[in-house]
Length: 482
Ligand code: ADP
Ligand code: MG
Ligand code: ZN
Image (cartoon, rainbow, N blue to C red; front, side):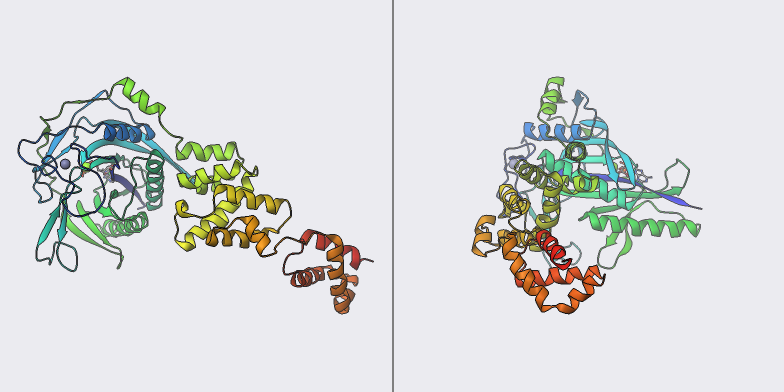
């Protein structure tokens, strides 16, 4: 029997608001433990939560970007469970009346597009953080644990997809697009190492052609999309082997060990947790008026999908270029600013994708720290197009601009790189090269025209690579046919 993977994702996003969800404490990663706390986020008895309006605005931005419906009224619930990082004994979350429902996000791969349904988007609060003393950093084997409440009460948005994803590759593509969208919306820094973006993946198999869902397992808290893709592939293989051997999949959380590539069961989820959800009596219902939603909608930026399409239709770029350039808002902004000063979209695209991104990649640098501005790149491209320097020299100049921060003009002048297009100057060099290589001249005249490459190479050598290759070719052809 052939099996089809079925995947659904639960994503948690910490919002980068100034203050926490229900109190005025600052939201910020790290810092001296327990310095950004108050009676509300420390769960002192009698302290009352107050909703953060900016967090709700960001939540609405996320919901709209995912094409969700926003009911006029949603409410908060208490999700009860015991854990040291949760001193209230419950997390304020949303349950059967979430903020937004029924959305979707379209993902286009080279050979496959899919519209992934979004089941719900809701608001909750993050817990404090347990710090386990010991070498492993894990609770097992630690002597004692400490709790840092700086994170307690950070606004947390949960996004739950429908089980519409059918390959690990598509899961990764979905997460990339989602992350990119969140960055465009400016609602979270999405830093996975710091836990601003976390993902759990649910996966099951079912016979191809059937609709019923199989028993699922869950991979928790994967810390990179690449690992998640690999872990899913591994877990799908494990389930496939079980089913092919006539065994059954047990509903449970599984752990994917990145180093060994092995899957191991963590705990059985056969008995679902009973969180005893009940309505949060300390908060009023959350009313998202039409006016509020419209206001948020008007303030929405252009999202990656729209921008990608515009790059194809307006600038005539290949889809691949459009995808690479819009994959980050910063890169897309950079590209458009350079394009405003140099009106050849494909050429700007080539340089941004090829030279700029390659440099940032090898240097491990952020674009924001790059020493070449869009105007600087445009200036360089003008010099190349005007024939002052060759494209190859231009690349060298670009690399030096990145390193030193000097302008194209400064580097070209200081290093005497200006391309030689002057015919009389080149004639002299060519004359010498022809005189020095009578054998090759014979070959050329005997019909072996490819040997012209040899002459071009010699001229380049004599001129330190500064000769204009187009002019050199023309002059050589003329001289050699005399
Ligand atoms: P749970 O109560 O175990 O958290 P939910 O019904 O809330 O399960 O679904 C959680 C996530 O798992 C959602 O993204 C959903 O699409 C996905 N999911 C649910 N059932 C399956 C299944 N049989 N196979 C794969 N994914 C599933
Ligand atoms: Mg769930
Ligand atoms: Zn507080």
